[in-house]
Image (cartoon, rainbow, N blue to C red; front, side):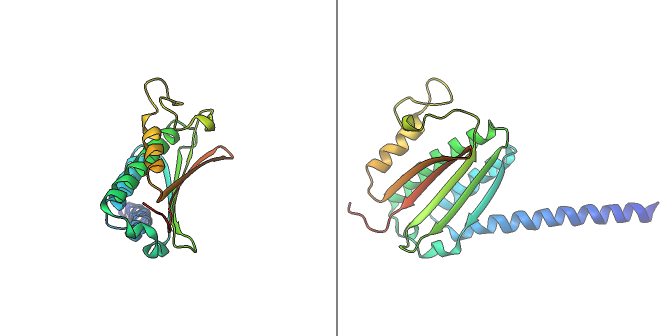
Length: 184
């Protein structure tokens, strides 16, 4: 029956269009990030995660346009991007190996105009939090663990950045803060 097929096709088109609109709205939030490579890195990593079947949630506040993330010089942008890249790569790999396969990215500016980016992910391992960032320590096997060591060195050598690691209810949480006041 042609009428029945037409109704089914219209229904499918409606569902596909709704999904497209949701995805379009979700990615529009990247527009609040500065156009200095950080936006592209986040967009690329979210696409990578979703292509691997990871459910990604984004919450990027438009208030970050008045935050410290917009005041970084080229070296600081590069260092921030390297730290962020390590954290996102680890979060993608950990969530991919978990049963729930979830990743979250939240970015906002606090009352001090500091920029905060929080990456949350599900994971499948027992994590020894006190060993994170130590040379050659990894929950993923031998000859690994260089990324978090690099991130730790970049943070230690730059007073502008601060990181925090938490584990709450089987969710691994990495927070990167770009502070307002610093001396370099």
